[in-house]
Length: 75
Image 1 (spheres, helix red, strand yellow):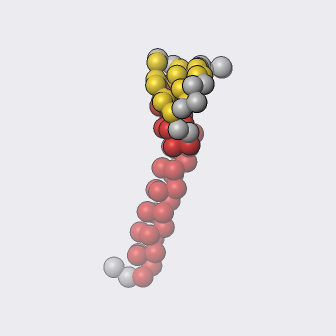
Image 2 (cartoon, one colour):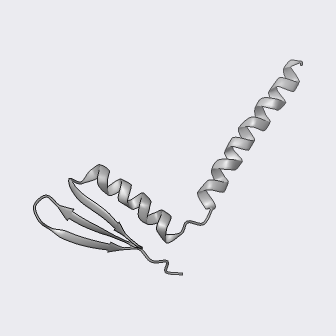
């Protein structure tokens, strides 16, 4: 394989990776998946308990505060 063929192979691999990243960025996400992602983020940033209940998250902080975060598709 000469240098030209190696460059083509490398360029195709980079394009395939970029194409995959674009596909992932524009794919549809459902309520359950978004709820799970938000749950993970909240656990990383806050001290307390985060429980998942269908399409909502129940959040209880160490100081006793409680919140319910509901995730619904709007459009």
